[in-house]
Image (cartoon, rainbow, N blue to C red; front, side, top):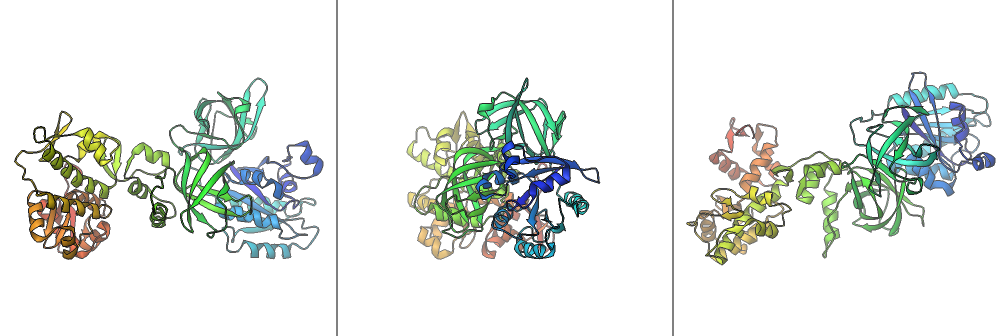
Length: 589
């Protein structure tokens, strides 16, 4: 099945067109039929010449019912943009197009109705001019008269072509069904309907009703008025639910696969189509059929932190609409982070803006891990992204650069604790966990490298390990702090001296294993060795020095001696005069 929504100005014949295409009445309420005005969402369907089933979501065109229009268009993959030949492009035509463009809905048809009343060519030309530069700029145009039937057959063929070009749904994706209608059936209880974009729903499935978090079970299932045992996206479905009452279920709620979505009240988003002063601090976020009040904190021209009045299920990459009820301006929203870190401290918002500006349009798991530093594989599923990063322990993945810094910090902590507690010099793992800010003690244990070891919940080191003078140890800590976010950007000699790492201090620190001295004036944190191996392992093998330099985000001054050091340690091996590869060890690079 495929689903298409209507869009366009009030009284341009959207419902009449759906009636002519399907023989069904999309206006469900007597008030709508009495007034000849669509107020709420309407639904109808037909079979196309190809045998495909096509359902229509008919939306109201009047400006007073824009929220209902957004609820209908939000979950649907394609649209019929309807313009009347005798009136041409109108204000709600523009408002509906702005919504469609903000959602990035690139599949649709331009349908000029009432072609029996006026020459449709002028309306087509005007509409194409308005569509130019939007996501619907190149869509096919069809002229029809719902009264005489002229062009209806051509429109049916065009709809068949449209749905054949739609991207396939993902039947294995987690379900998120935005509820657009709720009612009861005698003897059955609560029934909800919606457009299922991806995934599969079956009788007997347990789903989560958001935002309440209540678990409900699918007692019965229909699609296009036919009872079925399962339905896959894209389709219109009606679910008979067990576990919720009519009074507890409303339009805008969602049914989701358990443990596959992040129910959040805080989002970092990218905005499209706005300048700094175009929306207020209190707006409405429209996603699917939901309309949620949000507080907007701008992080710059293109980014914002949204705080939702109630939780809703999101994935990174979701598209939504931000609407200012006061000004009626809208913006397209792309969700970048569904569990963003708090903005505390001076300059936190500016720092967040700089970070988000470096991300792609839809961030990958790698960007999210770099921001959050530690994530479980299950966290990636909740965010809707593939798990990426250094597998540290258990289900935990850690950002490689952060892991390198942590290794050096742990070594320092063990030494400091031994100096303060000479009679019990081994550092308790739980103290290290708290000091390093790690969420799981298994991560601490995974950081411990020989000659240190973990026994009975404490980290031990060889008693004969030489101690650094406090001034040198402090200089090493300053180096680690400076390279916390870029562990391979080795300072030059002048900066090393400013940090307190003179030539003699560097030699002393390297001798006791407190840092890596790769060459004269080239010094890195202790954990950089393993981090470099982890990052180089992700490159296509073999790789050049230039490719390694780019991956490590460093300069040739650092990359060449670091690669030579890794060669000496047996981590890498030369393939020829210009390339090398990571040496395989126990089945892993």
